[in-house]
Amino acid sequence: MSESIAWIAVDWGTSNLRGWTLNHAGNVLASRNSPKGMGKLTRGEFPAALAELLADIPLTDKTDVVVCGMAGARQGWLEAPYLEAPTDLSGLIKGAVHPESGSDRLTVSILPGVCQKHGGENVMRGEETQLLGLASTLPGYAGLVCMPGTHSKWALLDGTTIKHFTTAMTGEMFELLKTHSVLRHSLNGDLETSARDDGFAAGAADGLDRPQDLLGQLFRVRAASLVSGREPAWCFGYLSGLLIGTEIAANRDQIGGAPVPLIGSPALCDLYAQVLQMAGATGQPVDATEVVLAGLKAARNAA
Amino acid sequence: MSESIAWIAVDWGTSNLRGWTLNHAGNVLASRNSPKGMGKLTRGEFPAALAELLADIPLTDKTDVVVCGMAGARQGWLEAPYLEAPTDLSGLIKGAVHPESGSDRLTVSILPGVCQKHGGENVMRGEETQLLGLASTLPGYAGLVCMPGTHSKWALLDGTTIKHFTTAMTGEMFELLKTHSVLRHSLNGDLETSARDDGFAAGAADGLDRPQDLLGQLFRVRAASLVSGREPAWCFGYLSGLLIGTEIAANRDQIGGAPVPLIGSPALCDLYAQVLQMAGATGQPVDATEVVLAGLKAARNAA
Image 1 (cartoon, each protein chain N blue to C red):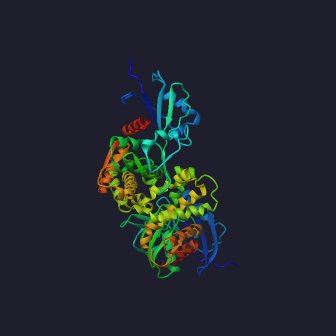
Image 2: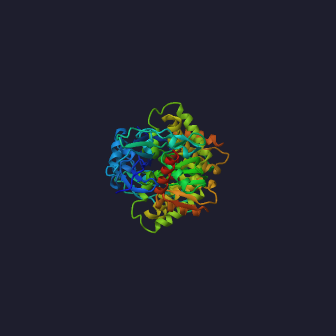
Image 3: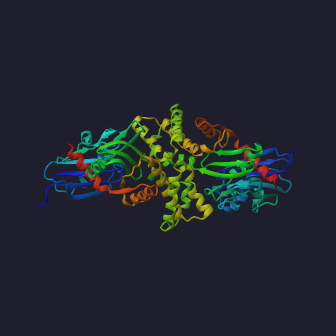
């Protein structure tokens, strides 16, 4: 006989949907993935997408489903109004909204995101839950947390309180420049050579050194291939290093002596850790799935 | 009887082709425009494009055609190898190349561009001729020249010598972000309201204030519409101001007390002049067509 399911944790992002069933001790019993992220669904399609995700999960009793991420966006399943930073993330569950689940068996709570109105307007949805999870994994941590990605978040955390945060469009900028800009002509070829590491180091050094000159230094990707015959792999590495170096330099004066927790894909966190080291700081990669689960648990336990 | 044509000046850019016939005194007799820029032509199509541009020009004798711009690029009509900065632009004509014109009547010289190998790899094609023209219009000018555009050039000029230059991808970045990034969702609507000027001023102030944080401040375009209900015109102005402010801030410490000559479209030069003023400097818009013609003349006279 299978162990009984206490509740279900769901991370509903723009591109993907992930769910975990947990027992009363908070251990994961099973996990499910689906490509049905918020970006692919109309409002009315959310209940069916959730039902489909959980189709083979045997539910006997009425079960709580705690959801974080873009399902709570205005264009998502049901808008969960933002909490405003600074705010104690233990209060996430109090801000949750409850859409019709479309099933007698499921009671859905969608956690809110966090916005910032003063000291730089900003928004996040999903990262706040990872931050709550980090706070429960590293109790008492006070300092900057870096969440590299399409839109990197840098949050100043103090225990479970998010005090301030910023968003750097680093990952999206890399994709835009690589795909649509004049720089793409210099990135066409074999990208998997050791020149890529050299380019990355050179770009990161330039970004750390002159972050105020990103618009100017970007063009070096093109000029280096035209004037110095740099190969595509070098240019690719340079572009990536330059963007990450620039991002880290902008946050450098807020980084203290303690390692900066890095929440994101392992490959990306590795690159950020390299550049943090070049900047005389330290990065500490953290498992992103572990913290989002820890955050969903912490949110539910605060209910 | 029409006045006799001494020579023909041509500015052959990526998108457009412009030609002028001049008399012996250097006055323009007629001008012609065509959309047949380098980007639309294969190598073999250049002679016909030039013939077409000049189709209704009565040429009796063999006539010199002096060309600047992208016709001399590797992917142009015939590659004119770069001069390397620092260099005296009076030497442009000595670096010219001479493609088969396809006509007994036309002798074509394509002027070289300028590259930079030390102190930041860089390239220009076309702007060097404008700079030579500026030097002949403002003899003895020594200082920074700003050429706003898709790829803005900032050149340190000393008489006819270009000492150093940089390229900021400001215009291209604006187009990329407006067209392809997540920010486009905040730029959808009526852009012609007074909120656009307010947004421009706010963005320019932020860019001048924290140029090292461009990747972070860009996201404010999105957050301002989500959190503060900023209208599309404000966001559009903010994005434009932020990029120009950031570009100018990166060059600020090289700008002296003298007005910075601005060579570009009048609308864009106006915006740059506004932001230079916010930065405690002055911009001096210069007619771009006038300087390119002056540059082609100065190059020819140096032959």
